[in-house]
Image 1 (cartoon, rainbow, N blue to C red):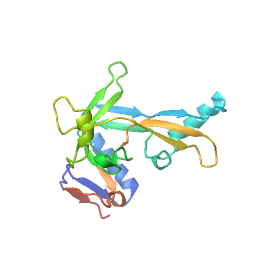
Image 2: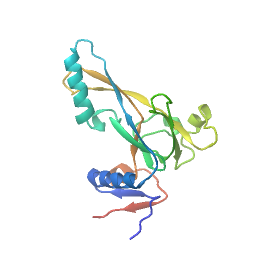
Image 3: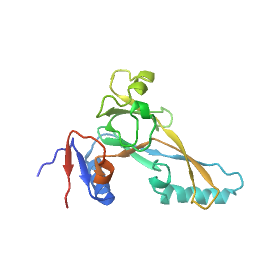
Image 4: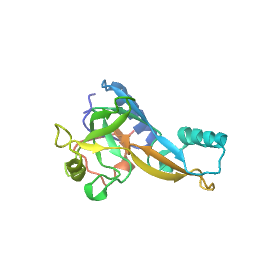
Length: 193
């Protein structure tokens, strides 16, 4: 059976949505970039070895729900669907749950790391102010999304604060029904299994 690839696919569980996202990202043939978060420990009293151990745990074991919605590593491919994971500017519609298609990845020439992501949001009213402040050279409806900084605690009982800089996005070819509540989509495919 042929399912529309331009529709958001809704699933009952995170595992099902993650599997679908992996499958779809493997099918997309555009160039892939990886954005690794930049994590900084804000506590002065730790030894170098303690810092390395903590950063290793943060990058490999902490879930986005523990890191203010920012993933450690983000796979980026143009033409893929993405969803905002944090509120950047609520009055401009750049909020958790806003979805769009990644149209262009602007990179730093020297490092080949992503600098600005240009998203075409499903709802044209999302990002009007961001587009006014930083317009794309040729595409009036592409919205710039840049890394943001969020602070979180390493384990709740420890006095270790970490700052993370990352793009506030997640792949959204497939999402959970729970995450979709309150959102509006023009086309969806629902998995009832």
